[in-house]
Image (spheres, rainbow, N blue to C red):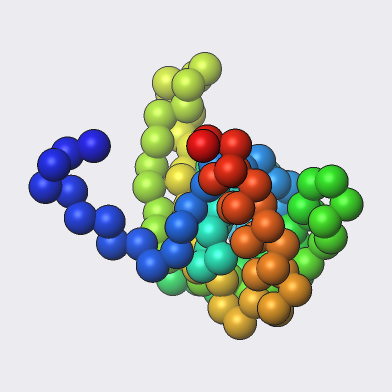
Length: 120
């Protein structure tokens, strides 16, 4: 990490592969998160989402930790090269949770604390 780097995130974030489905402009899309925090998720998808769009996410947590629906807002959108097909694009999407239910936040905190304890 750069010595002058200042962390701007409010919420601790951990790498996590969690099933997420959402409605894109064309159809229902299922993806997996790259990372998660109590404030939102980051995922990669081949569907372009509108910046600042509000979307409904259906999140299926592993190990029977539950399934939750939550509204989110596209807060970050990046265009990335496809690792296997350079002529195709994929998109990195940061989604901020809007009014997540407390039980879902508890589940995310449990995932974060288990990841942090594994790193120690």
